[in-house]
Image 1 (cartoon, rainbow, N blue to C red):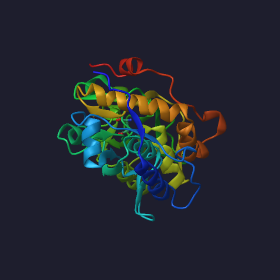
Image 2: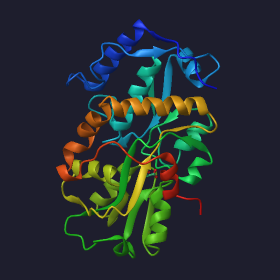
Image 3: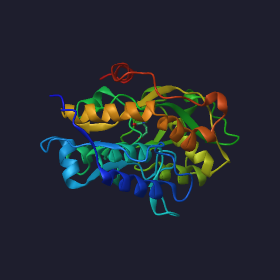
Image 4: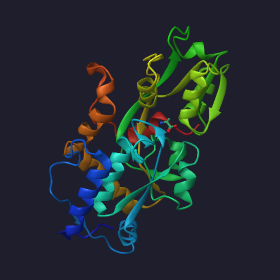
Length: 301
Ligand code: GLU
C-alpha cells in the first residue's frame, strides 16, 4: 500500500536537527546534514512501522561499537559515530525522532532485529541471500571489498598464503565462510568483535585479519605498523536490514537512502569517515549496484 503524500513541516524537526548536529559534530563543522534549516517530516499512519516509531519518539538502530569508520562508541566523547551512525541519524531525522544506537555485532545483529530489540540494522552488513531469508534488505548503500591486514613485513601476500596461518575474523561474518572456502587450511579464529582481532594481531597471537577494507582501514588509522594487502578479493555491498516482509518500511528506508545519496550527504560523510584516509584514486562514490545484483554475489549454497 502506498502512503498518502501529506507532507508537513514539523517545527520539532528543526530542534531535532539542531540537537543531532551538536551531538554528531562535537563542535566541528555543522552542515553535515545538508544546508536545510528544517527537514520535511511526513506523519505516517499509526499502523505502519514508521508511525509506530514516530509514536515512540525514537528509532532503535543496531550499529557496530568498535568499527571506527562506520560505528564506533567513542570513549572520548561518549558518543557513537561513523558512516552507519550518520546514515542512522539521517533516517531518524526524516521521521522526526531521536536515534538510539545499540551495539549490534556480526553475530547478533539479525537476532536483535528479529526479536524486536532494534528497528533497523546499519552494521556493515553485506547483503546475502542467506540473510535475506531472515530480514529484508534496503538497496545497497555502500560497497566494501574483502581484504587482508597483516603486520608490516609479513610474508602473507594473498589469500592462499592464509593456509597454515592464524587468521582472525568475526563470528557470523561473510568471511567466516569465505576463508573456509578460499584458504581451508587457515587456523581460523572467530571472535565477536573486530577490536578483539586488532588486539590479537598487536600482541602477535594471530598472523592476519580478514574482513572488509573499510574496517581494516580503521585499524591502520589506529596502528600504522599494520598494512592492508589491497587485494580486494570479495565485493561486499552493505544493506540496511529491516524486518522481513515490512515492505512499507523498506520503501521508506530505500527512499531515504536515495535522498542521502542525491543531496550530497553520502559523499560528504564518506569523505569524512573513509575518503580522507585512503589515496585519492581509491576513493569511491555512492554504489551503482542494485539489491538484485548484490544478492547474486552471495547466493544460497
Ligand atoms: N560485511 C561483512 C559482513 O557482513 C563483514 C563485516 C561484518 O562482519 O559486519 O559479514
